[in-house]
Image (tube, rainbow, N blue to C red; front, side):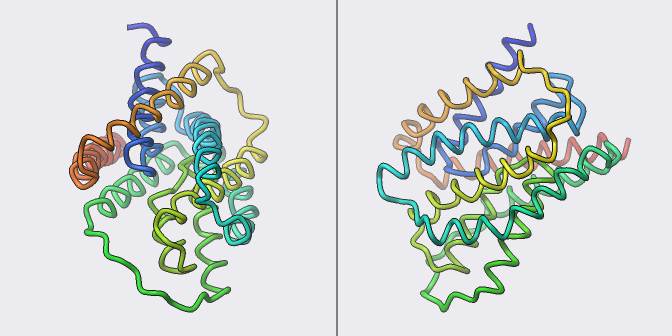
Length: 245
């Protein structure tokens, strides 16, 4: 199978997951780029940031149109992650490939466990600026280092720490993810990229996200999350085994 076809198929599957689950789907982008398309871990995390930025911006437009973005809250939360995202983005290219791969596998496993955990409604709570800044900085650091959007981390934080409603948290998380990804990309401008692969991959992911929304209307969210969480755990185990062996 040609590289172009693989890029289109992988992008479509990841976009499908993003559209159906609203977050977490981009975690599959890095292993797809490494194991299917032959990218190094550093190049894969950079390419993933481009894919995440494009897909998040597209989804952000849709959520803005529906009035589900808390701009002031999201901007403050995102601001805390800009510097960490830039710094870890600059460091990522200098880390050993095994370290990046292992760290990514752990984040993928965390995302899977988060999806398997039953979601409960968060009671209203007082917003603590220090805690919000700390969580925002941590999310920025993860995005910059590993090239993941971090929606599986951002949404619970926006609900639990900042007290947003779930629908509003999903929309606002896209703003945070977009800002963090752009900050991380600014630190990686010198990285050589294969645009002939990234372009089709990104386009297929954006189109797949729209199909994912339709899929979500036909299959229960709990079932989708369990299927995707199982896939993520398998990917995480494979990546850890690859590092160890």
